Image (cartoon, rainbow, N blue to C red; front, side, top):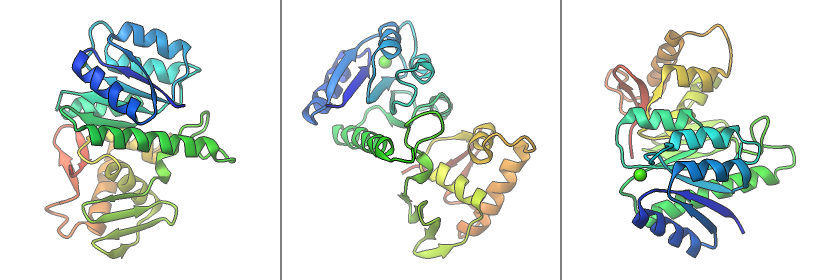
Length: 244
Ligand code: CA
């Protein structure tokens, strides 16, 4: 049975999440504060962590980082819950290693669907004999996840992109960037985060490279690159894919 750690200080939400994930056959451990969450992630293995960001004492971001740094939960899928709508928080959440995001208030069905999807991807990656996960862990490689959003279909296995039914040829970097942004609609990526994920540690790139790549990608996928519909600029922060 898959084990889920639910970290949420608001009792009604904590109970709701535990109840519905429990009904899905998952074994939930529910804790109300960040300090206890830190102890748990350091010592017990979980298959999924559902993590509220705003916690008394130790916040969710610290718990997230602690999980990623712990030998037992370095690769665990993490679904963040937050009441805050500020896009900077979403950026922080993803950069600290969370896999997905739910903004409160959320529907129970959406919660269950996201939790299931994370668990499935993870179990599949762990079952893959050649280690489909990222180096150093059994974490599912998000780069292999097909995405379909706003009429754009991205199939990483076939390296194929369709926009409104029309095939679009992208370079490897354009493809990686589109896949990254479209996998997280509405979530803002700073140029730095984009560089880290698309260029993966290459040294000779600057933030200007991110802007240039966005420009090239827009020319290929946007009906009107001057008035982007899919890849949107967030002034002073970075870029995001149009929210769903
Ligand atoms: Ca809270």
